Length: 337
Image 1 (cartoon, rainbow, N blue to C red):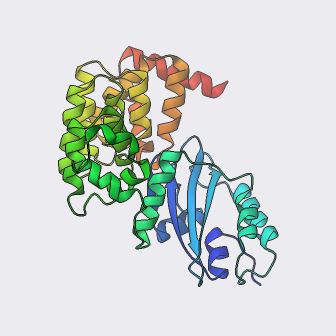
Image 2: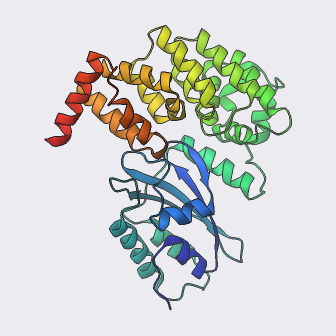
Image 3: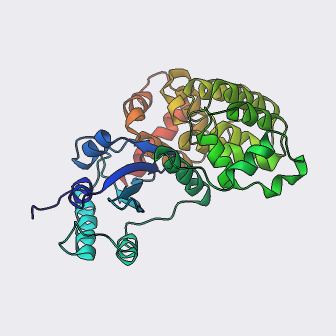
């Protein structure tokens, strides 16, 4: 048997089909070609978080039994998968399975492969979205909570019955936003449902591409709410970079770029930072925060391949403020120490 050097090669040798999802910043699909380049160390991981690639591998064999691995692998300073941990992970899989990779895999063997140092446990919210996405991608029916959630959001049930609405049902609706009347009932709920339902919907929407109708409802909510919903409504715009830029401009004007909001932008709305004005406003607000906070947030976002060049150029901008210059000086000092 040829030496196995990648996860893709292992899964192919085992005669399985598979899909890959990022579970770091947002729950999103990674196509096979992109994953092959990542594994071959030809491309940086596109969505790093805290120096790691957090992925879910869904794979299945001829029996159509599906298995899931949640894997967190460290990245090097270039954002590439670190070769040694990746090789260690593959070796652990091979040792758990033996050399006969084409046999049917038992549940016990799957459990052994899941319990390793590179595994991680996603939040319940991300698990719900992940489950909904996988079901849709594989052409399977939504969960048993889907119908009740749809009935509630469409106004067929009393408003006070919201505690009976399952988060999984809301996730199913949000990943199917383009089907039936889902966009309309979600937009309406963002305007008039109880706050708990609004927040739960936002927790789902931050992982999907929102429609224009839902986007407008989220922007309206950002104008209106100054409670816990502000952060969640902003996070829910993460897939819409133009809307995120608009929202961040409003928050900048109203001096609402708090530490919590800045973390939200870095974690969910990072695509907006490709905009020159938005990036400048973000960095200037970040510079007013404690030095350790500046260092941590900057290090996190400069690791994102889509932002790295523009962020490095921004800290060299001769027109930056004195506050930003001081913060950058503190960053360099901490890096050298």
